[in-house]
Image 1 (cartoon, rainbow, N blue to C red):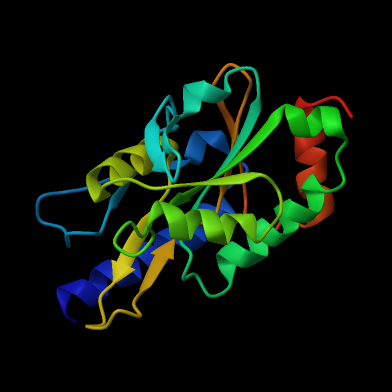
Image 2 (cartoon, rainbow, N blue to C red):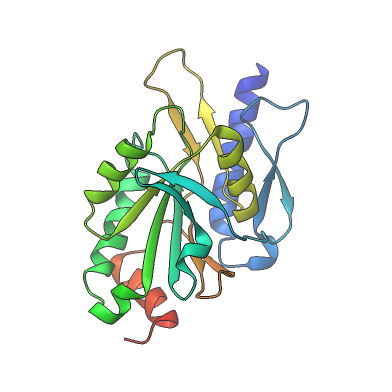
Amino acid sequence: MPQHKLNRAFLLLTLAFGVFLAGSYALIYVIKPTPDSHPSAHKISLEAPPGGDFTLMSPRGEVSLSDFKGKLVLAYFGYTFCPDICPTNLGYLSMAYRQINQTQRDNLEILFISVDPERDSPERLQQYADYFDANIIGLTSTPDVIAEVARRYGAVYEKVEDGSENYAVDHSAFTYVIDQQGVLREQLPHGLNAEQFLDAINRYLTP
């Protein structure tokens, strides 16, 4: 089997296994590029992701995680051309956002970080994020910076090369919960409904 197909099969297996283990922090995966791997493929290791501050680009300029100190932050890695996973996850998150009170909204920030910086400009990202009407900020940067932030948060992704501009990007679909001190506290698995997202928000922000 060609190497690129092996890499993609390995990534898909990683994503499926990661979802299965999403509730256990002891088994969170961190991506690590290797010299002999496909350029956008990643290797996993059994380490809890450290998280930490980062600075990315929005249409209004640089945005850092530390800008939101004192707020609960929910970060999601995806891309605007995603056919189903991203809009489903953000849609349910948006429904939860509309159920919280104004004080909670004032103390919550949702970040949508692109894993497709080649196509997702800051302006396109923000237009996409605004569609969900949940005060979401769309963020991007260079491929190297995105890869580093993803590595520190345990997000996994790979561009599916098909020779066209309509390529897909396979990616994990966790929502990362970062507390008011900027500490990565937990990852929420894909497939949560609005009520489950609401429960997660209420664990950190008093209703």
